[in-house]
Image (cartoon, rainbow, N blue to C red):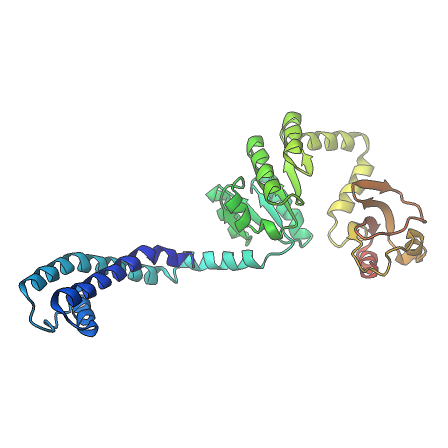
Length: 329
C-alpha cells in the first residue's frame, strides 16, 4: 500500500484530464458520452484514429488545449507506472518486503536500539537464549552488518515514535537502548515510555549523572558498562572462583549447571503451593535461590512460601531439571 501512494498524483491528474476532455466535447460539440470519451482517449494517447465527428472551430481550439495538457499528463502517469513495474521485483524491494513480513510476525520481542559494541553483546545473549528481537540503528554501516548476520533490522532513529512503532513496540516484551550518546538514550527512553507505559526498558549510561536522568526519564533498569567492568575486574582479583561460577551460571550453553528465570503463569497447577513441594522432589528438583514478586526480591525463600501468579523464580540446575520445572509451573 505504501508503494501505491506515489500514484495518487498521477492518477488524479489523468482522471481530471479525462473528465475535462469528456465534458468539453459534450458541452462544446454536443457529442454523446461514448463519442466524447473515445475522442479524449485517442487524443491524449496520440493514437490518432481521426475525429469521431467534424469539429467546429471552437472544438478544434479545445482539442489543441487537450493535447497540450493531456499528453503531458498521460506520459507522466505511464512513466511512473513503468518505473514502478521495473522496480517492483528489485532485490532491494524484495528485501524490504521480507523485513516488513518479519516485523509483522514478531510478538513478545525485544527492541535493541544501537548495534555498536554493547548492542552486539546484547544480541549475542538474546540469540543464545532464543529470544526474538529487532535491531534499530540510524547508522547504515551498522545495519548492513546486522543484516549480514541475518538479523531483523530497521533503519531509523530510536528516538522517533514512528520508528519504534515500525519495530513493533506495541507488541514488544521490552526495549534495550545501547546508543553511544547518553542524551539519545534519554530521548529513546522518553519516546518508548510515552508509547508503552508498562514496557520493560533497560538503558545504557556512561556516567552516574546520565544514569539518574535515564531513571527519571522512565528506564526500568540502568547499567553502566564501564562501572560494571571495573567491579568485575576487582572481583576477579579478590574472588576469582566466585566470579567464575557466576559467569558459568549466566553464560552456560547447555552445560551441567545453568541459572534460569521461570514465570508462574495464571492457571498454573502450582499456584498456592509451597516451595517445599518443589524442593522435596530430591535430586530432580533445581535449587530455588530467589523469588521476585512485584517489586520485591526474596533471596533464599523459605519452604512455606506460597507461589502466586506473576512470581518469577530464579533457579539453578541442569537443563533437564529446569525443563521439568517449567513444565510443572
